[in-house]
Amino acid sequence: MVVVNGLSNREFLELHARAGRIGLSGGITLIDKAICRAERHLDEHDQWGCWSHAFLFEGRRADGHHWVIESDMQVHRKHIQLGVQENRVSKYYDERLYTSLAVLDFGLAETQIACLLQAGLELVANRARYSLRELFGTLIALKRPALRGRQNPLARKCSMYCSALVQHVCRQAGLDLAPGVDLKHTTPEDIARTAAPHVMYRLQRQVARSSLNELKARLQWLRHRKARPA
Image (cartoon, rainbow, N blue to C red; front, side, top):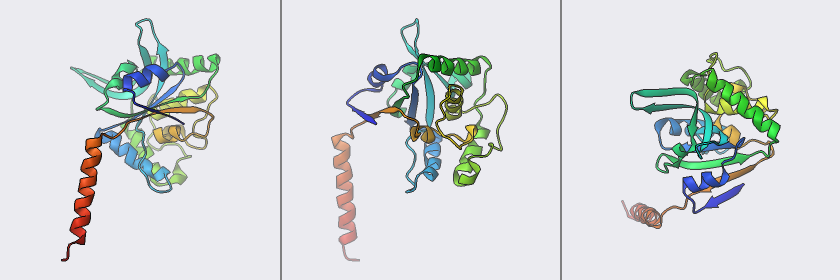
């Protein structure tokens, strides 16, 4: 893993976004936190997962922007996008909303990259939906590992959430990121922990000094309170 410090989201993505690479993000919304909390079942120490969303980099297009293929839920003015879609990578520039970012490079050949993009665009064209129902099925399976290799009981046709999409397009190119896990049980944390050879570039933010001082003061106050006689 290559840890990157001192960059904004925009600078990090401009540096590492390439066609065929996989992106991961973590955020502050309730669904982000729920997914990361559920992913604790993947960790032997019950640590929460770091990642709640996964997407495929499509490359820079004629407009000069990097684009991604992803399955997501977005609400705009009088317009809702719910399912597999193309978006500019600039949506991830918001550091308040997307607090963690990583880019995975699997060193794919041009033919594999073309296969990834073709599979992703096919899902865009077919308007594959984002299914919360399937996501709930995955959350249930996380609590019972024996179920993860079986078909998601809440699976729907022409439907795929974010990390299932990434696993789907990768398998189309001959790359299995989570062997033994059903396509629609794949989580962003599974992708982050894949044993497939790759390089992960991870943006690591430094905690502000004021926040550290505040935390130290809080810990000192708690120790002092515990030390006082009852």
